[in-house]
Image (cartoon, rainbow, N blue to C red; front, side, top):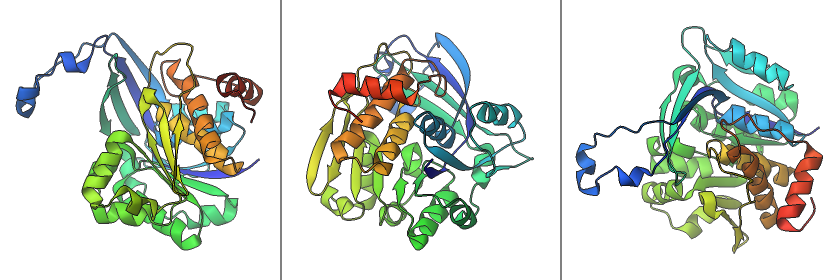
Length: 313
């Protein structure tokens, strides 16, 4: 089984759904003095975090995830969940004075999300990963949203060790300077952002899209229900979604996409096929409340992929 180092957060997710659209309740001319309340129709507490979600989906795809993250004094239940799913927790550090990170997410009918994130123990995840990479002989790494110091350190170490990695700053992108973002993207195998994050990346770095493409091998921009775009070798690939049976909760869809992307990279798929694998993984997630509540076998996944895209894995 191929091994992938997964750096990022572990958190308890409190997921809520707003049975309306945010835009109907926010006055554009009063955005400077915002004071709104959204009534949640449903609430669920789930295991989550970028590292946890990506690892969960990689495991379903038959890839062994090596999680490198920091949890808190309330980690026991999460650790049991990982063990139940046969995901190793060997390199998850427990910080006894803080709680595991918490994420509060409310999503509207347009799949827009408002997120409040408390870093907790995650803020201590700025330890070296060099020994882990050497011991586990990982083929690929993904640096998903993590503590500020941690992402800077881990991308630098992976660059120094010449380990291919995916750079994924996520919703934490606003906390980095343009210079920091450029340095973390430089030399990466892949840089992945949603369309909003890409706009922030452009604004902060003052770079053009072509200049960003000179920093990384693959540039991927996810577009939610509109699919995604992959830029590779001066070519743009437009990736459609895989049709979900129903849409209950978009939370975690991006992490599932990233797991599919990793699977495609490990198997040397062409850029468009790699994106389609990510899209197929995302479809499972939006059909369930929570980010680690769906399940599939690799054979079932292949069947669904073939049905959606008329090609085989």
